[in-house]
Length: 172
Image (cartoon, rainbow, N blue to C red; front, side, top):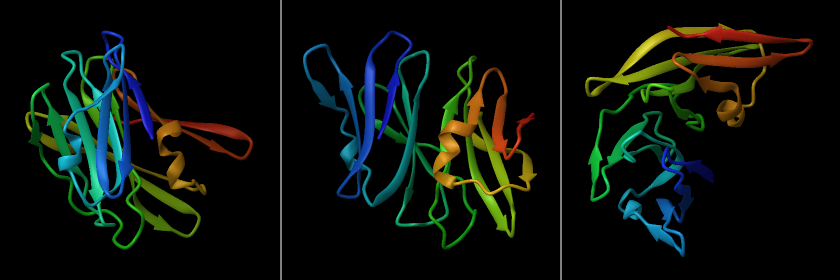
């Protein structure tokens, strides 16, 4: 489950229920489903809210290594560009974050090899997800920790704890 607060202070939650992506908004009295249950066969989600209260939901389906994206404009869900590829046959963990200037970024593991992992980072710009320089680190990282190691200010950063030090990497 993910919880986000919009720029105007409205709380949102997102979770997977019976394979459906569910996003709800709190209106001050109750939680309202934003028709997100139309997005089915989902096993991993991440979402952000832009400065216009639009929601971008990214999700994977049935362990397919692609990441699908949809945007909610307050009335309906629109399909956005898809990121294809990744590590086939693994759980499709990734995280989506919004920069301080409201540009969405995704990071996901792209290659696992021995004691190293390569992360792919993408920026959504002009209707497509553009790949940014990948990062390879020699560390064992639990893929479910991606949300806690990826942060975005005006540019994306990976903050990776490795034994006795902290590895910082900015993607540009």
